Image (cartoon, rainbow, N blue to C red; front, side, top):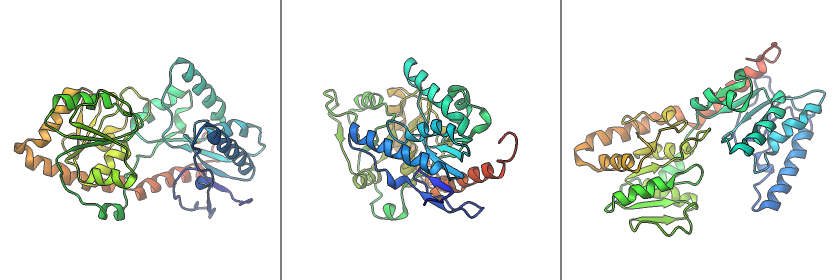
Length: 342
């Protein structure tokens, strides 16, 4: 480990560099903490390890969302003092712009870290367009690596793909479940199951909505047995979200319904009424999309969308994601000698 030149802290099974440098996968070395104290201790250990590795590494692939305290980003700031710095690629879910004070802190940290970072890899074309201006970094450093579905063939074969009379939704980050609850009130005869922690304690849940906390296995099973999968996303955010949920639904041949107004990333994956359905961000628009799927007159069109959803997943495989990331890294390494790495 002491002489490893290629360090990876993101959960990606990247191949060796063309130079022959073997990757050191550090992701599992720092398990997530279960409380504030554990997170702080883990982040400190991770920060120290990164700075130690940076002294001999030539390439480091770091995680933009490496915990509450962002040790990977902070490490980039301290690398300023190194005589010889590694090439840094920062990737992951990136950051959502906070309120005025938080945005000032975010932008300041990124400004301090940026001289040590050669590439930022985002997950949507929409992010790529706004990222440089939003965070005050050079545009030539930004690349896009479209996300992938995460279900394995073994997981898919382990569940029953059928329709069981309910609409499924799930996940916690960047969701707007108020939209879906309002939609459920407009459709009192439809049954909804929502797997999330964000609605715990709510007293205004309609009678036709069931809120659950599900294990990964149960989440996949419920998705596979649903009539369709709705991913109600919060609008106005500055990073893409929800791709794993609606891509996995499409991998199972489900109708994926996602709101796309002022939401980044959706149109990178879904073509409306071709391999999924894109709605506006209103309960009325969502309810109309759900009723369109249930309408017997649209049976053939719905069947075609489901077929197209599964076919389109060839473009969103994990293998394709890894190839794209590897090419971005190799492009950086190849062009490192140029005056401006572009």
